[in-house]
Length: 258
Image 1 (cartoon, rainbow, N blue to C red):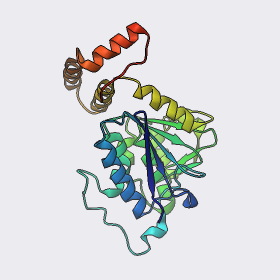
Image 2: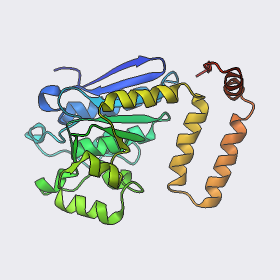
Image 3: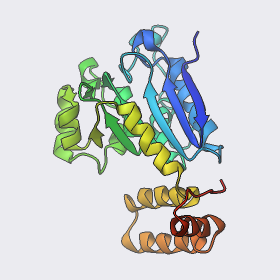
Image 4: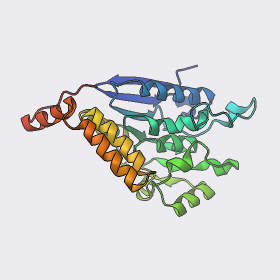
């Protein structure tokens, strides 16, 4: 069995690739377990400042490999990862990571593959990419955190239409309705450029910003305002914050501590 998910890290940018190109990176048990483990590995790495998530071969991810469950149905009741089961964690972990995640989408991004991409902070798609919440095709519903991850990204009526029909959405439409951030001829190169730009910033400020954005999507105004003040109080006068100011004033690249 090939390594289902690969990792390389350079200059603070981790490149994570789904690595089952012969099956268009379809999700089997080994892929789910590898994605969950990769998320936990990255969570513990202070030297990683941004993550680019992509797929090897012709597609980002074709969705669930139904043949992987030939021996029986999975146990969806087990909560091995806080509120999530293994399959949900494969998508939710990217949103939970402390550093930003940029998904580079090409080819097909269907079903569970789309839910994994939705876990990213930013999604860049090639013009020919096709996306779909395809579970209804098999008489199922999105169950890898899709209803959590689409909250605030697409309108409720749009989510209903996509979920009820399972229709395929071209990249240009996906950008219009919020499924992807933008379209780029070379999605991976664009995602890498964003990741490198993030990696050049104060990593503590970036992580604080990601936490605040997540809180802003759920908490009340008073809680968010207090969280902003608390985060800023920690950053103000810190070594990395002083380095950010010095580098800007001296017109040089900043050298931050992880």
